[in-house]
Amino acid sequence: MGIFTSHQLPEPVGDTAPPMDEHPARIADILAHLRQSVNARITHPRRFRMQQLKALEKMLIEREADFVQALADDLGKSATEARFSEIDFVRAEIDYAQRHLAEWMDPVSVKVPVALQPALARIEPRPVGVVLIIGPWNYPMQLVLAPLVAAIAAGNAAVLKPSELAPATSGVLARLLPQYLDARVYAVCEGGVDTSTELLANRWDHIFFTGGAKVAKVIARAAAEHLTPTTLELGGKCPTVVDNHLPATAKRIAYAKFMNSGQTCVAPDYILSLGDTDALVDRLEKAITGFYGREPMAHPDYGRIVSQQHFDRLSALMGHGDVVVGGETDTATLRIAPTVMRNVDLDSPLMTEEIFGPILPVVEVKGFDEALDFIAQRPAPLAAYLMSENPRLQAIFSDRVQAGAIVHNAPMTHLIVPSLPFGGVGDSGMGAYHGRFGFERLSQMRPELSKTTVIDTMNAIYPPYSWAKRKIINKLM
Ligand code: NAD
Image (cartoon, rainbow, N blue to C red):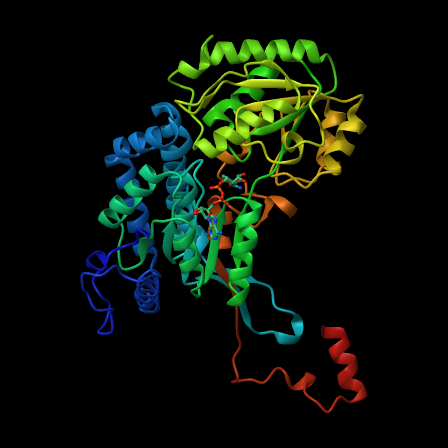
């Protein structure tokens, strides 16, 4: 288990910090140390939060090349994709938080019922304490650092556990974060299931998990032991209903589907085609060739599958229908060409499990209602997409489909709008973040009421409850 070693432990706050020796620091020691710093309230002032956000931004600017290289090593991500979908994404979150932090932190005054007046009532966002952030491998940097931005903004300490399946990125985070951020309150613990299990045995104030539903249940069970609140950012099968066949339709679907080789939680998982499916498949093929050329597996902008296990799983999925575009695989480089399938077996894993790779099944449906029923019969996805210019269909889709997000005509773009909440519903997760939503998710929105005892305006409501008092109480409340 590769975790922080004790010589990396930060300067103690107070006298009771864990002893420094040559042995790996235990997670419990790291946590105790962080908690001690939080109790000393060092994360609370806005100035500290702003400094840390700035330091995080500095790390992303100065060490961009380290991250770009790590993401290429882990997933074959092109430098452009690494920048905009990971590094710049986090920088945009930081920038947004910096611009809005003062307003987010401001207590909000609320009205007090007449019976309690005069009194002041307000809601004040308070840090919750120490947040554990566990991330997946597909956007291994963005999906631990964007929650970290929320944790910093909310005035919390945090421990990051990046995915062991993206070891290069995990290593860079473990090496660089302590160089830039205040190590008294932020730490990185590297490792796999063992590390996670040890982390989860401890009491946290919030667990922010991004990953699959199976592991989410392990997280939720562990959190229940300590009654720790969780945010669970999960996946699912995002449907894409295609009504129109404008030139942009196939391009937008192919763009969202094949970025990061389909290893994106909000990538279109499958298409429900309402119209001319031959024409749609034709346009998808043209879009793929337009993006990645005739040999996509050799194209520098096209990434690879994360591991042999996922490569084998995805290769096997192609056996559950007809491959009509792509289908080529290369074990040596773990690459799978952008692939479109038709006549797929609806009861096979291709259509019952999240694909999470560059395979796009196209299912023909007879009409819009059949498409809506198809979606309704399956677990709620993280996002549902409709490609249609018909306002009536758009309105019905928004009304009838249950999903983490509804997007018309631009799959996946919703997550780059920092003022929109990002999260799932039902099987695709609970709790949302990004921008203000992340800040509030990791804050306690604490109510505060203040009243004077100099004049007792509450005489009218104290017992005994005479007939006259009952009338007053009923009127006031
Ligand atoms: P995963 O659930 O296998 O692993 C996620 C994290 O959990 C990793 O850090 C891993 O080390 C840890 N983990 C694994 N097994 C564990 C166990 N038994 N106990 C404790 N911790 C454990 O997910 P993954 O394969 O890394 O990522 C893919 C999944 O994540 C997909 O389902 C995808 O849809 C989802 N995802 C969701 C979002 C989102 O924002 N909603 C984003 C990206 C990925």
